[in-house]
Image 1 (cartoon, rainbow over the protein chains, first blue to last red):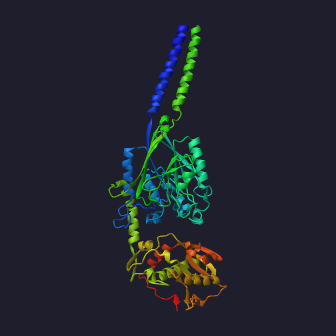
Image 2 (cartoon, helix red, strand yellow; image 1 turned 30 degrees about the vertical axis):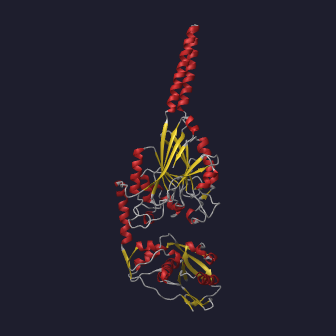
Image 3 (cartoon, rainbow over the protein chains, first blue to last red; image 1 turned 45 degrees about the vertical axis):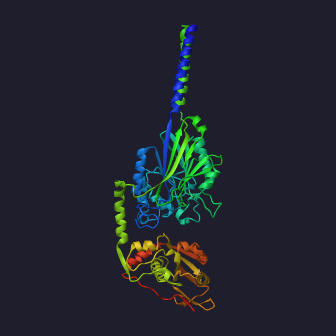
Length: 303
Length: 259
């Protein structure tokens, strides 16, 4: 009887051991690769710039951007395609169709989400609402409160995307509308403090929802040299923590490469913006691993 | 028999173990970032176009081009805002046209007439070239979405407007108001619709929404006793005017006389 008990225990523990081992070896092999592609301030630029344009000759164009995105998707299907706002206003396409074509093309390119820029109010909050049926992607803004407008229910503060097992939390931030957009256009849209909102968002996305990556889609602007106290992406990065990437817009800043900023906890945040008018596509590749030991070795940032 | 009890214990242990195993494997695994790469990819002509996208855009583009490039009027000589110190041919045209077409809306809606039109020189973004005039011309001159606003101003503010002109020395578009700048740089002979300005009289001033909110430091426009938003875009005023005329007039009359 003693002998039998011994065998049973051995069998159980060896089963435990082998399963445990297989589990851990299974874990260490889990590597993931996510490609984040992004645009900002496209401003209704659908056609490429003409060949005689003094500054941007032959640059941009939605049909070409679509080709580039297709190529990247073939290379890595694990793509998150984002826009940081100001989709509207800049060419007659907007004056004639009110943003319909812009949203339809972004849907065809399979954009996942966009935040809302000040120019997206150029036909009023009603004009934005009127184009909602043409957008198959999400509108994300955490600090604009649309509760008392027709846009109520069309904008989420954040969205969690599950990309090949990676949990990516994306939240949006918009610029102060007062003084920038006519009140008659934005109506009862309420602007809330972006830093406080961002702190709430990271608490939800990182602490509660346990996202692997947190991305902020911002239309706050990269930096304001003449207004040092104005909130911008660089300040937002410094004043918060648990954000991995800030994709910006508004200031039409052509960054050659993402800026690396130290956050409140001393960790690195990437801030990027790719100019305007669909001239560039931003690309950030995240390589992840579920081996915690790797996390302690630190991450390498190649920009 | 005794053994059976033991077996139960073992199987219980095993069930507990399996439960833990499944809980552990089903719960979300955390991923840690090991490497980040970032770059900017320019979109150039090297990139082929996706035919479905290009074909989708085509009818929209053709409709716009057809509309923008259809000839609406003829301009006998180039109107340019850089060819005048106090007034320009294009500025006079803009102000006259805005006052005239604005009045069709204002009279119908409010049973009142616009007395003066004032627009900023900076709002004129292009020349009106000699030759065929199209809607594209209007988009080039007036790319912004500014709309017409009428402000009820007292004569006192009209005097401030005159002072503003003398201080700024810019050929802002002006219609309905004439005055002379004396040798002492002081204004005289200030007339609204040909009549001397009176301090307490209310005048209706047509302008754009940008200036009505204090743009270009035209603060006198913020002192209005009443404000009417006509929901009529300045560009559409221009397009409607182009559609209505055959030949664009060259308006050379002097509105601000300097002694």
